Length: 172
Figure 1 (cartoon, rainbow, N blue to C red):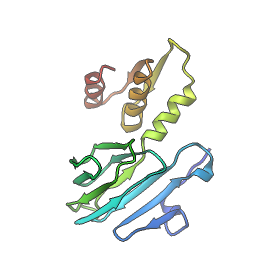
Figure 2 (figure 1 turned 30 degrees about the vertical axis):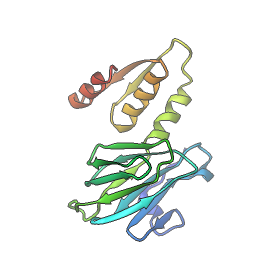
Figure 3 (figure 1 turned 90 degrees about the horizontal axis):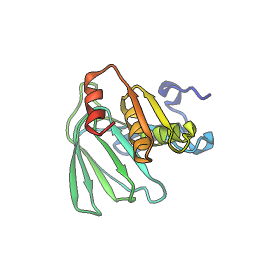
Figure 4 (figure 1 turned 90 degrees about the vertical axis):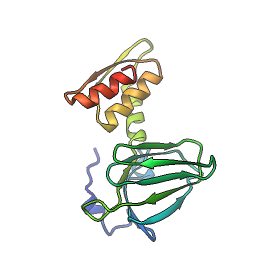
């Protein structure tokens, strides 16, 4: 079991600082779990060009607003809390942070896809099997979507009406 806090990562080699961002690498490849997990904070009123040619990245916006510019496909998407984007084509892109949340940070970006994907992998669901997902927050929702995409019967358990409605709108 690995348990870490962002507080204990702050100021160590697991924290990387860019010109207008800070990334705390909570899980890395040397942890040998098959994915990485980061908390990244981008400063407001900045534009950050990014490109990940060697891996797929999924990002969940927790706080803040802005835009995601896909330079390869000439599209721009709005960013707001609850937005997820997946860079499955290694797209060259920029994050444009436009507002300042109350804590003076743009937003927290989190890789939820690898966590959810690995959860479904570890479940080792047999063909024709079912998967119960307890909690349909960001990770549970993503795990349910991955399992459903694989043809698994998904049973979602959730008490928050908005999360249940979102799952139902996706056929879960």
